[in-house]
Image (cartoon, rainbow, N blue to C red; front, side):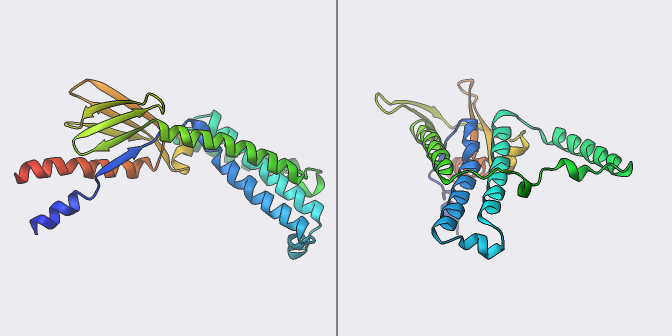
Length: 237
């Protein structure tokens, strides 16, 4: 029974922490661009298959795809450029609802202010999607490679800070009394599954901060379980 408990606690041998620039949040735009490119391109190749399937003209389909792509662009740029706390977002949403309710109450037709993609000439050509997709793939690829060049590896007894490719530098610190916290003040960080991790090494009075770590909460739980193995082994011996 004791050996089984030890095996369960020692389930994680190491945990990797990779930090990325906030521009990594452009990945939803990459996904939407790829999706819309496939829809528009296949519609052109298959004699307007998707247009006929939903009962619209190819021009109208292109307008709607472009409209939603512009919304995805706005969302991605908003996330990258602005940090929005949940409390402020809720307050802004509450004020917005009150304003809309007041305008409706006094008889203002607010729907006339909302653009109708069917009446706009927004259709973006297929080469545009290809060009944007190529640029996003290059930018995101560079950030992913950077995250694999410089990262942190947490083991049971030590923590490694890895940097560089040529002339690679390594820093090693003990994990004894290691303190690790995860913070997600930005609403969109929570929405997109990232967080900010802070590591404190009390013995050296050193702080390490990692911004935009994917699955930050899960990573911290794994590290807690990993480090608890040290205390368990010490007590068992």
